[in-house]
Image 1: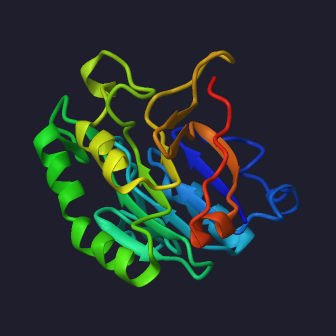
Image 2: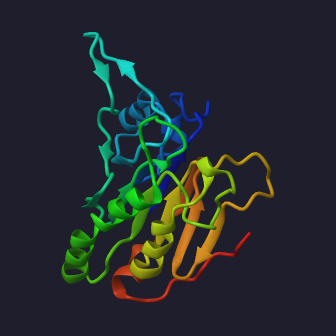
Image 3: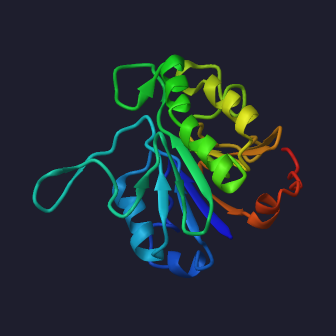
Length: 224
């Protein structure tokens, strides 16, 4: 299956009708935060496939035709503190936001991030019993601690996420938040059994579920 993950910046070649031809083979979409509702809604309505997302640390609000405030993209599923099973059989969970650096929404302390992660544990244990594995894809806005993060407080990684990857070993951890401006920036890292991917802009990811379901080991991609 193919996954289209987006984060942080709107791209002209996605926000246009030709998206249907360019991404006609995509089975699933992931939003890693800091994108306006209309952008995600356009992707959902045009490609007509599931979209799962978490909020970033920047808040985008819009109004409906009735003048009411719309706080979420229609047609997409918010997976903050949730673990869901997609129709394709993929197990997905998510945690929104970044570290707290001012009084805006969707910002949390390291302790609060631990609480978000702990809230997923009952369902992860259920997944292990029911499906033989805890999780396939972990989605967040912020990166894990010391993987793709930066030294300044707003862009520091989350310590709970690193522990989460070490214990539950999802196939992928998809995140955003850290902007990529150079071609030589590291956006893909193998951490134990998880491929951590910064989805700034967009990433197309080929996910072969057969080895995961059958318990076989996957080949890691090259680090860069």
